Image (cartoon, rainbow, N blue to C red):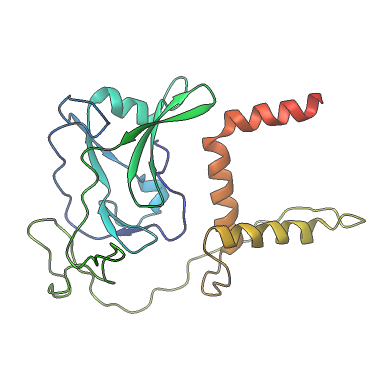
Length: 231
């Protein structure tokens, strides 16, 4: 399974017809033909939501699929020895290609072509689309060129099923629960979830995002822990 370009609770799957991938591999400077289709956010990450299009935290909708050659697809999906490459979404919403080099990730440049994004309705100032691209589409209607389907209004879904997951914490001179709550509040601000009372699973989203980052950088994490233990 590939590493997600961005771990953020606002990433959502969007309904739409699969878009045909481009002719050449999207890895920078690769001149091979596209031989396989790669989905940047895995089906498991989207948790049963539509798979072919994703909505970014800004609201912009991009195609979730890329054309890549077999070699570069193998690097993205990992295997024996771990992941050889990953795609990352930069703050300016450019997708870049990183390759593993020991404990580091080396930026090899922007994907070319970039994942397809609908340019209609973007503003010159912000580059972000309105709340729904293709405002001329009726509900349920599909754009014949890009495959985006405008969602139909539906009744609110029931709240996501949850179950309790607990952990024992110190409760003496060190009040473990207060420490964890403080850290979670700080990371919630970083992830843009500060004061979001509509998000019932703030603790879960913060912990899963931080642990996902630690997994991506686990080699550096292991070395840092070993260095602290030996000091």
